[in-house]
Image (cartoon, rainbow, N blue to C red; front, side):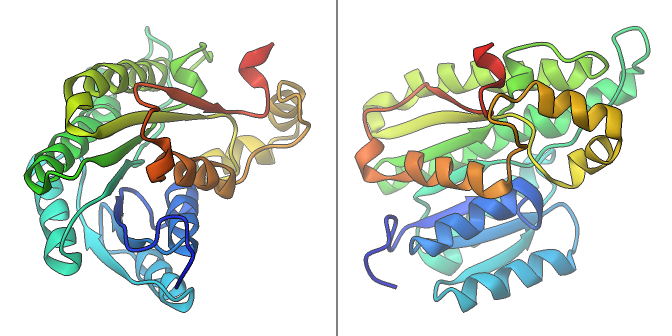
Length: 254
């Protein structure tokens, strides 16, 4: 593609057939990155995203993997390396939202939330780090957390706990691999227009409340997070690690 900010790099983006993950994948591809698209099941949207990336002049591969299963994540990284020869950037984005207060949640709901949002990030980091250490040329790990890992939101206790875990795991892992030239950072999105938030944004009262709490006066779009991911993926960002980059239109500044 030429002159892209991440020309020649290879990225895996989990949960990237739609929403924030797709936004990140497309932003990386526009800057010359080859991208492995992922969903937890066979997805027409995933295959469509691959075609969109190829139209941009880059290359992509779609791999089915459930991030809550370690063997799936190990295979996801392996397929990326088999196809493109290396792994430079790992974006752990896949996530779900389970509703419920502490007294309402079942053990099964709690475990499901943690298995995708927190354990899935752990598996993604683990197998990316193993591969990056093997290559010996450093790398970039970007975890998608949430402002719900920094401030409380009523009615989504397990989600807040899982994202708080991602935020802290990011800091810890950054220290473990700093000497290897691998940076580990998180992005904390505010309210972003995706399938996950569609129901809330359709409800007039909820939508007005969410907008009212976002000083810039609009909800975010997936590209807002994609642009932040590109920044953290740059060679020029090598001195930034263990950081949580808040992209929330000013929500947590209040």
